[in-house]
Length: 302
Image 1 (tube, rainbow, N blue to C red):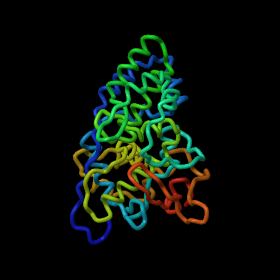
Image 2 (cartoon, rainbow, N blue to C red):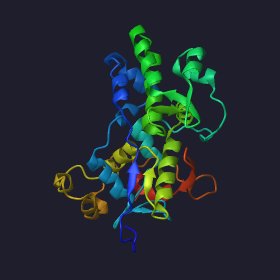
Image 3 (tube, helix red, strand yellow):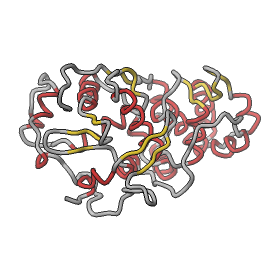
Image 4 (tube, rainbow, N blue to C red):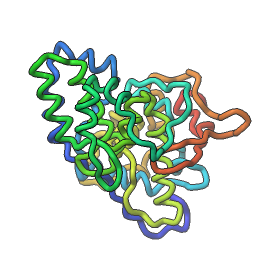
C-alpha cells in the first residue's frame, strides 16, 4: 500500500439483479450456445453475483492503487488490467476504430433494429427513459427474448440476451435498465477500450483523494481479472477463507504471481499511442490514461 496511509478507504460496487438475465440465458438451447459465443464472445461468464468474499478481495485490491502510476502497487510487483487481459477473458477482439464516446444524440432506431433483429416499430415502442436517459427496461428484453425463443428466432434471442448483459453487468448504470450508452457499445462491438477506461477512471476518481464510494465499472470483470493472477495452488490456495485478504496479499511475492496464465506471453500489446508514452482511454464515466509499459510482465516480458 502507499506509505503514510493509516486507514482503509471504503468502496462499494454495483450489485446487479441477475435473476432475469439468468432466466433469459436459460432460453438458449445447447445447440445455440456456440452461435452466441461466436457473435458475442464469452460474456455469459460475467453473469454472476459477487459474494462477500469476492467484494472483500476487490476492496482490498483497491487499497493498493497508486494514482500516479495508474496501477496497483504491491510490495514486490505491479499489477493492472490491460486491454489484452480483458479481451482474452471475454473472447472479444480489440478493434481498430474510433473510441466510443458518450453522446446526447437520439437513439438510432434503425441501427438498433438491425443489431437486435427486431422491427423498428418494436424498438421504438420499447425505448423508454429512466433518469432522463433513453434505453430498454430489462423486462422488455426478457419478454421479447421469450417470444422469439418460442418462434425459434435464435439470432434475436442471442442479441437480446447480449445487450442485456452489456447494460446490466458490463456497463451498469440504472437498475434493471439497459441505457443508450450500453446499447451503442453493444452495436459498436468494441467494448474492451471502454471497459478498461471505466475501471481506471472510476478507481482513480475514487482513490485519488482517498474518498471512496461507488466504483462505477464492471466489478465482476475486475474480480475475475485479479483472481487470474493469484496462485491457484500451494499454500496461498489453501489458506483458510477466514484469513483477511490484506494478510493474504501482503504475503505474496513476484514469483508467486501467475504472470502468464492468460496465454498471451510474448505477444504484441498496446503500450503507447503515437508519440505518447502511455495510452489514453475514453470510458462512459470519463477520460484517463494508463501505463501498460509498467505492466509488461503480465505479457511475459521481464
